[in-house]
Length: 162
Image: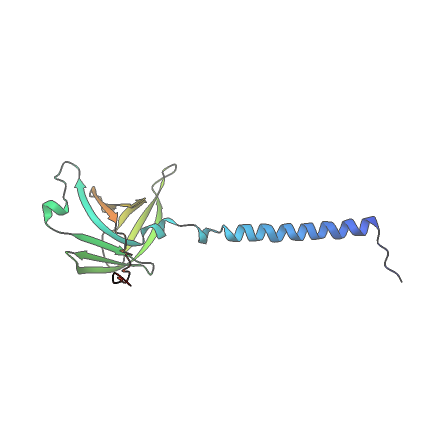
C-alpha cells in the first residue's frame, strides 16, 4: 500500500506543526515572563536600610542628628530582620509579609509581621526609600534609605617605567 500525498494530508501536517510550534512559542514566552522572574514587593524589602527620620503627628521629628544614633535595619531573603544601632546588633527577629486590604475599594497594603513582637508595621518601598508605619494605632512614620553595597575594586598599582 503506497502512501498518497494529497493536498489535505499536507495541509493537515502543516497545520499540526504550526499549532505545536505556536504552543511551544507561547509556553516559552509565558515561562520567561512568569511572576517569579518579576520583582515582588517582598523582594524590594530585602536589603540594608539606614534610618533617616521618625515623625509623629504634632511632635518633634527624630533624626540621627538630634538623637545621636545611627540605626540600620536589614531584611534578608530567609525572613530574618536584624536591627543595628551605632553599628552594633541590638535585636533580630523572624518576619513574614502579608498583604492587607483595609476594605472594599481600599488599596492593598503590605504588612511586616515580626515573630515574637507585639508591634507589626505597614511598609512601602519606592526606589531607594522605605517607609514603615507602626500598625499598633500610633501614627509613627519611619523613613529609611537603602544602603548600597560598596563594590569598589582595588586594582594593582604598577611601577612607573615598567
